[in-house]
Length: 251
Image (spheres, one colour):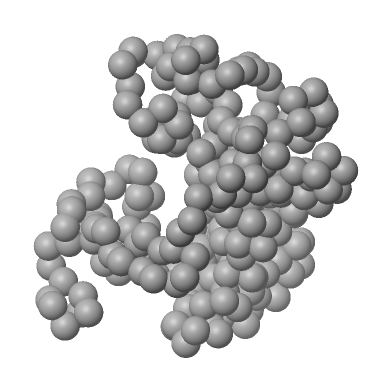
């Protein structure tokens, strides 16, 4: 694709302070190669950026930086869930329009489709993919109704727009359902959780796909989880390439 010469200044949103298990790969992707034991040392190196701000990753702080620096665009995809949530809020509250700043790397519609459980489900159904039976809940009453419709436990609870699946879980009975849904709704910035039938025990595979703006796609890597579904990917050993898929299944 042709180089975009309109962009003179870009704001990269980092992932903020993290601990083990919160996606340190985002700091790695921000610096490409780590030459010091502390990623923050690289990220704040004056040779890496013209100006670096060590501030809370909140919409208010980012808008203040936009006002001061006047960048042409924001790249939110290097900072994980924290950066994506902040970028979406800046889009919702009109800050991007006020400062004539655009999102690059992913637009607001693409981020919403990937993070909003209902929009993602609808997108999968439109392209003919099978998805587990599920429903969107904004309260415990909604969750109970969806559980009745699915008709069996266990159930998977997935909050929308949370970091690393925070607030989600597997409910094996009504009491656990109420507890996990309440926690998930509290942690979701849009107060939304997806209740879906369990696929615990299924094999889990991942495909790393690169796609350009002309809709050309290539599978970079296939990954097989050593543990079945039900064990968080972050806790599971993974093997690349996938070992037990036949060529027919892979295709």
